[in-house]
Image 1 (tube, rainbow, N blue to C red):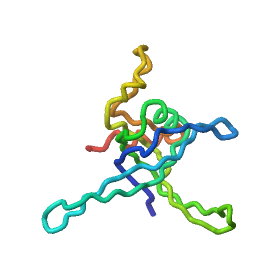
Image 2 (cartoon, rainbow, N blue to C red):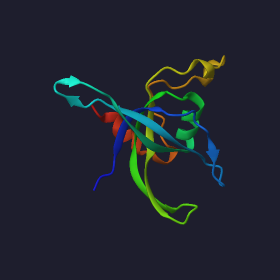
Image 3 (spheres, rainbow, N blue to C red):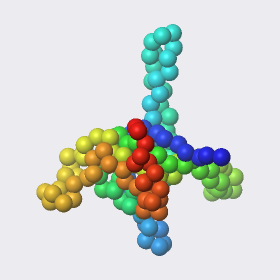
Length: 144
C-alpha cells in the first residue's frame, strides 16, 4: 500500500504557530484547492475544496515565518484519519494531510522581508520536515 498526496493550493488564513509540550512547532491550516471541471468543452465554473494540512517542526516554522493567508504552496504528504469525541460526546472522524515537503510557489510576501540578507526565504525550494530529511534525497533524482 502507498499513502502519498500532493496538493497545490492557497493558505486560507495566516499561520498561527503553536508548540507542543516538548517544544515542537506545529500548526494546522486549511488549504484551498481549486478544481476546474470541464463541462461541455468549456471551463464553466471553479469548485474549491478545503483540505486540512498539519505542518510540523522546521516545516511549520518556515511556512509560518515566510508565508501568509493566500500564499500558494505545493504540499506533499500523507493522508491521515483521526478519530475523536467532541464536546457533546459524539464520535467524529476527520482527514488531514500531514505535510512532509512544502515548496513556496510565490515570492516572499513584502511584509516578511528582512533587511538582513541571511534570513531570505528559500523560494521554490523544499522545506523538509526534519524527521524526513533523509527521505528527501530520493526525490532529487526525479526528472520533474
